[in-house]
Image (cartoon, rainbow, N blue to C red):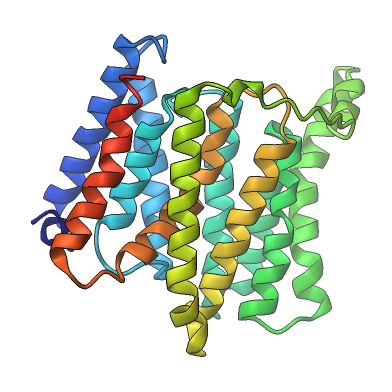
Length: 300
């Protein structure tokens, strides 16, 4: 029954999923996981939902159904610590806009503009979270996968990324505060993950990681066996996920909200794996199992 309901992209599906997110948000507020709720909070997350759904549907990263959006929201419910508007959220939002351009390179239209935009947005994300620059190689991987390589295509994203950096440096230079710009390139590495030591974090990180691994294992042979456009997209999704893991490892001043970087690629992978289940009762059982984890978090 659940599988049939979410196997379409009707507006009622989106309304139901947004209401589910509202339930997670209210539960997180009353359990003390988030400090305040306001209209701005809702708008920012609605913008994020619109962007991730646009990137997915426009580039055919999953089938035409609501499973990706549902799983993305359920994963948000797994980790109440991501339900906050901070630098990690802003950086993630900008990276989604950047990834919109990266995945859209599968089309031959306006390639140079897309490459310049991808560089521009990765530059903006770098100003918010310097370690997010690890996503930049995805641009060149996408060029390799979808386009033919030449000097103009390789140089354009570098040129685009320099624009926000030059503008920011000029602003700081005017106010005699260039040290702040130099600090963007002063990286320190402290691999302290004690923030994830809570039992519920270990359980849900392990469970979501296991789901992603199983989906990768199930989907990859089918996706890689056929030489089509999705085969290239699947490879790009895989490296998107690996890059997100690397970023979570590298970021400093962890608050738990950095896990948001992982949720977009994880939801794409899990949704693709979930779509392979042909028996409705088994798909319903797996979906209920995934959903139960988002309820468990509020009782541990």
